[in-house]
Image (cartoon, rainbow, N blue to C red):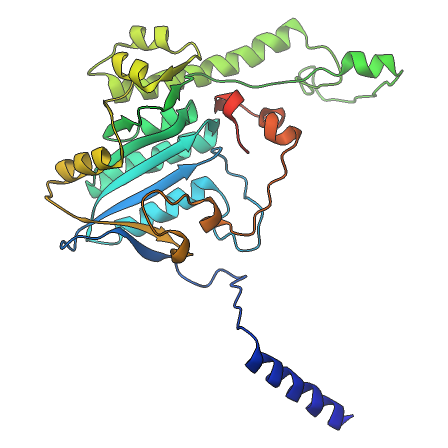
Length: 325
């Protein structure tokens, strides 16, 4: 028996010496690292933060995923930047159709808090899509730049409550529901919605819509009145050029435009551009997407949940056709 154990240990040691050593940090003990994207002679730092995909608080899949969701990723990187005295500015890149009302509002709040507490400018750089909740988050920044081909706007709130009542009736299926009040199952997909229930849900939508308008007005009050914003905020999307003409953004440009503006706001002539990453070899330049970096083993399954994420209960600042869960 003892000989067998010794033999197994010997085989394990031999095998470990002859094979590549792979370390999987399942407990997330490795610290986030600074990755240089653009070098300069200055020790001052400009940090690039990426908010890509649907804005949500749910964790993504993948065993190497550290923080799990966009809200915690942005929060952790803002906190990391705040602790570094060399950081003088933030470029927040947005490529998102929006997402959850609460998730969007938390990121908006944290960016505002970061700016006020640390007196560090934040410049929003809209990529392919920065709609609805993306527009909401961008409103927390000092300045908003969009790529020439950006789609933005879609200012508004949406929720989808399906009605399966006819399908159930067709197959003779009945549900017995016991509830404590007449509105307890409001929004149930298993029966028709009453007039009172529709009015109640619309009131919730209206309240969140009013908050959205307030956020946009707080950001653009020197350029747009609340009445002008209400006219623009009917849910439609805008091209970058339309958004500029409507004064929803400040400039059309590329990354160098955002960097130039950030340096100007930070009162710097030059700075080293960095990002924070757990997988620095994947974050090699300013155009490297963060998706695989944050979650390299994630496997996407594109189904109904991908097409209609709002089937999950909730209110959304979301441009639904572009939703990518």
